[in-house]
Length: 163
Image (cartoon, rainbow, N blue to C red; front, side):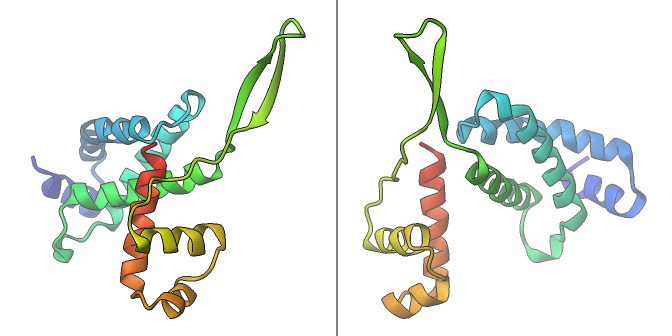
């Protein structure tokens, strides 16, 4: 069976076997993004569970009339959820203190800046991420369309998460 047949069975007949089949099929994709975004080891199981929840959400809300493949639709939902979760994780690192045997110190990690090359991305990064300005205000100040700004935000997020 293909994805569309399985989704039909799940949406219209609440078929648990079809849902389990999709879970088994897409768990590799979920793990791919967990590793691609360098999710800390102690958070990976939680992210995997979130990925399964997002898969279920994608199955329930998928509409094939929108001319998107199910895989792309699920990937978009999964990426957005992982971005939101990663944004909330603290940036801590454990450092050993050599003067004290068995002593450790937890400190906040340094902020990593993405490798931005275009003026659009630099402007959006500064205004949206650093100054927390709205899309509308950025558009008014720079003359970029909202779509250009959203696309730049998407590219910046990808660069931030792929480090």
